[in-house]
Length: 264
Length: 264
Image 1 (spheres, chains in turn cyan, red):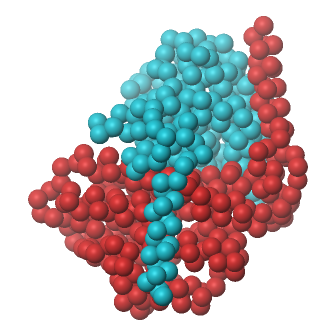
Image 2 (image 1 turned 135 degrees about the vertical axis):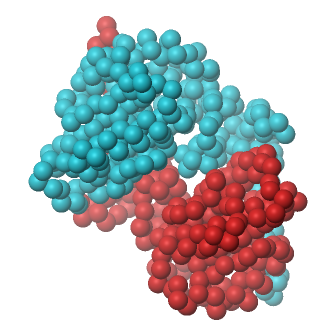
Image 3 (image 1 turned 90 degrees about the vertical axis):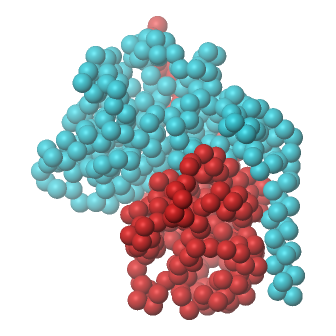
């Protein structure tokens, strides 16, 4: 009886993997050379559907990826423009707020919350939704992106702006760390203020000497300098795993969604 | 013009958060005291939908959670019994296989892959789908769970069994680490063999002296002992963040989905 039940359940599981997917139009096929090509109407072990691809990105199972797979462009577009992205972001900031408001802060003003900027404090959806950017499915164009940064018109990610506005009266000092070059400071600060972020303890950008370092190295170094200056990193929030891994990540980290690009 | 565009996009973002959710039947409302109650037909900052809750669990934004929120029982049931859970699992193991097969292993037989057991090597869906377990939405019953373990009839998680069968010919040695008590060894080994896992380098369970330690501490200790014995942990796969965080996590870690329970 036990053996029968066992094989019964084993079969259910095995069969379920060959069932039709609700995401057939977004299936990817990984070739033996590792390249992803759009494909297929039935499930196969080497296929990754777009929802599974996104989950693998968000859980840091896939890393070092370059572009959104072409077959997932529409899927990512729908996610980013639909309410799920906003809901997922608000979920992260509500959890963070529950944590932040239940702590007793020191009286020396050294308790800080670290935020990344792009796809965290600010949302670049209007940039990424352009046809030649295609939500990260087309090759990155640095010149075009830098022009966009100079326009300084990115709106806030609503969940993060609201969270920021809740953190300030609790006594947290805010530190923004971004991999943008220091030479863009005026544009970045203008954008932050336009978006509703009017105050911060520090807004740290990449110095010329730091160009060429990965984001995880750069951000670890900045956080270490903060800790050495006596700050306590109570929370740290970003959309990239490189924002919240490395050294001195903070007492607690929060990963916002971003299926559009990967920064090492 | 720029300012107009800016406010236009800001409004799109703000409006999109109040749009109707496709997951209205699964919305949660977090009360001011932090308790979750089922609720609501429109979005509000303090609400977390079940898809957002699951993503927050999988990205380790929520931790230390006790039960699946009652309002998400059906959502979790549908996820676990539908094809998405299997697809997500196969995505993780395909990524892991791409990694595993592109490495050159040492000739000393010391390259190992570490696996957790429950919801990793084995699937306990048949246990969790019982009405009084309710996919983790009902209080954990240790006696009932121990009886289930003694039946030793859990089927494999198909993605992981296939991955295991691909790892062996590549030369990887397999180490299973589970927080189950050593006193259950005979049942666990029987279950593993019935499920198709016929060989392993080690299958490590919790000794009496280790009861009371958290999983992350216990598993870190076991991995450290492996490294000190000369093993190289090339990969480490589990369904809990406590499987893949702590010390000596391995060269690369892989998080399988599990929205049913949390182990610290």
